[in-house]
Structure formats: structure tokens, C-alpha cells
Image 1 (cartoon, rainbow, N blue to C red):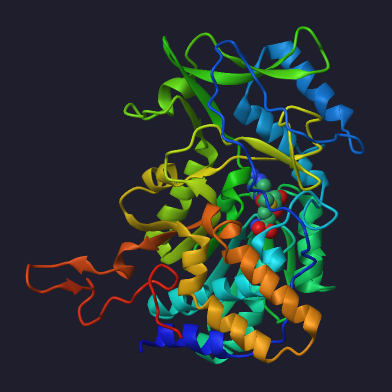
Image 2: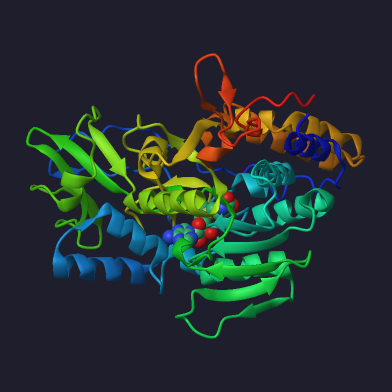
Length: 463
Ligand SMILES: C[S@@+](CC[C@H](N)C(=O)[O-])C[C@H]1O[C@@H](n2cnc3c(N)ncnc32)[C@H](O)[C@@H]1O
């Protein structure tokens, strides 16, 4: 067996104490939504979900949005989403720790330690397949509470000998000061330093519990050059989307306006004339009635692709999404329930399914894109079943055992997170085999090296 695959095997069979599920009980991940084609022209019906809105409210965000709309007219859905989620003063992500039991939703790294561990093994495997570069930058976009990176660092420590003295550094891209604090507590304990100036690209630094340097940035562009493994879990779905409606006059952009009947309420309208976005962002052969496009996600993927081409590395993107087939997926979550996206803005998470076909197009031809494949397939290929058995064998506490099994089911069951969550990867072209002259079969471009299967995307035969 090739070395990088041996690493996968060694880890999934090795033992680390089971932490059980991380506060996961009957919480909802951000899945449930009803897909609904948008039919009306001019005024769009907003999604009214069965929910309560008592408790939190944020009149300042609503006031901010209504004065903006009063001054300049209806705003795009992308602008609405950007303001609501990441406005530097009152954005939802900027002010809240929204993950977990007291928050609005739960994510896979929060559900089980196994999730992050297997992704950690994926990182080491890709680093090895790239020829074990001397330095490895682990970059996470939108790290939430820091749980994924924390589980990965535990794997790195366990696979120290395989990492062979590589200079590992951690780079986190986080827009939220509140969450960056939570991440610092999780990853560094006391060993953290806040930056001096807002203008610095690095706004926070620290040293991990395992002694690795960690730096926080606001933008992907600010991460230093170098061989990097990029991870984005439930990050792209939080980026602003533009929404478009097919009409008999062509594509028109959906905007957010004040309801003239109720000035305290917002509503969707369809802009009567083409906008720059409606004329540039939609594929000419798109057959759908309604389309969502996330140009910010496209720019970030382009950036990752360029870095992978120039400096080597790989990206792993995991999110709920589709391959260019879905239409109206914009939804809100609050208190683990669906929430009307236009109601009490700033008090609920806003999200839209990731269009992987768009990310693939934006990545361009200089990198190879793998997937999307389902979370169930990815985790099974990475050896989640073996890993669960190892943890269960070493765990004698009945409730932790039950939680391990329950969280395994949540992650892999096709009715739960196993199907809707998808894994997608960008890899350097030199990483994969390319067909050579007929009869020679698949050969790696670099002479003398045989292509390795990509962990997670191919069956590794771990049992
Ligand atoms: C849905 S949470 C996912 C958290 C974590 N990855 C997980 O799976 O538990 C989205 C994360 O992305 C961050 N985020 C959202 N928009 C961002 C942006 N434009 N730039 C950087 N981080 C952003 C949020 O603050 C948060 O940490």
C-alpha cells in the first residue's frame, strides 16, 4: 500500500479517547427547507415558515436596511445577505456564537470528533501525495467554533512521525470578532495575542495547544503564499447570493424592498429592468425558472485554484449543495427552526445551497475538480465505519457509546446529513494521472511516479 494510504489506514485503526457527541441531541442542522419555484412577477411571495419570533429581535438592523432602501431604492439579495450576516457593527455572524444547543444550528464538526479526524487524515494524505513539502499551511475558511481545526490538530499530533518534521502552520479566515475569540479559546487557551491594528492583514495570532503557530485573517487574499491545504465547511453557503427570476422579458433580478403597506416589513420584488448581475451572471443555456448565483464564492474559488496552481496544495469544500439543478434555496435558521429570511433581519442565520457546477466553472481548467460526492460516500471511503468500531471498542461508558452511534448515524444516514451534504475538491493537475499515449494506460505526468487515489473520493479498502 502506498504511504499516504497507509497513513489513512493507520489512523482509522488507532485509538484516541472518544469524546462522544459534542453537545448534540435533538438539534437541527441547516437542512430542512421546502423548495419552491417563485412564480409571481413584481412582488415575490416570501417564505413564511411556521416559527416563533419572540425573544431576540434586532430593530437596529431593520432600521439600517430600511433607511438604505429609502435612500437608494431596493437592494439586491446579495447586499441584503451581506448586511445582515457580516455588517461590521451589527451583522449576525459578527455579534453571535450561533452554533450548538443554545444557538441556531449545529454542524458536522460539532456533532462528532470522527468528522474532523477523518478530514485531518485527508490533509496528511494529500500532503504526502504532493511529495511531503517542507512546509504545510492548514487554512480553514469560516472556522465557526474551531472544532474542525481542533480535531485535525489532534490527528496531526498523532501522526507526527508521518508528518516528518514538516513546518505546520494554521491560518484561519474569519470575519467575526466574536467567533475568532471562541476559536482562540478552543485552539490556543491562553496562548493568544490580539492584533494591534485593524488595518493589519493578520488580526490575531496565537500558538495551538500542540505548539503550532495560528494566525487569523479576514480575507483569503491575505494568507501567505505557500503549499496549503484549504478547508471550507459550511462556509460557501453563508456567502451572499444574487437571485434571478426568468420572465417573458428575460432574466430579471430579485431585490429586497420595503412593503408599502407595512413600512416595518420587507418584501421581495423583481426589478423591472436588467441589472449588471442579471446580464453577466447567468449561463445562456440555463433552463431553470429561478437561479441563485454566488459571485463572491466564485472569486474565492478562483483564488484557491490560482494558489494551488502556483504553490501546490488542495482544497476540500463540504457543504449542502447541488450541481446546477436547484432553484430557490435561500432560507433562514433561528433556534434550530426554519425562519423567514426577511423577518427580524440580523437575528437568524441566512444560507443558500452551494452550486458546485458554478464553483467548478469558476475554478477553471488549471486545477482538477473532484465531486461533489455525498458526505456518506466521502466518510465511508475515509473509513468512518472502522473508526467508529475502534472508538466503540475502547469506550465502556454506555452513554458515550450511544452518542457515538447516534452521531455516526446523523453524519452518514442518507435521510439526515449523509445525502444533502456534499464534498468537492480542487487539486493540482500534477496530483492526478493523465492519459498518455494509447496503450500506456494512466501514468502520472512526472516520470516514474504512479498516481495515487485521492482519499475520500475513491474506495480505499480499509476494512
Ligand atoms: C455556518 S458557520 C460554519 C462554521 C464551521 N465551519 C462549522 O462547520 O462548524 C460559517 C462560518 O463562516 C464565517 N463567515 C461567514 N461569512 C464570512 C466571510 N465573508 N468571510 C469570512 N468568514 C465568514 C462565520 O463567521 C462562521 O465562522
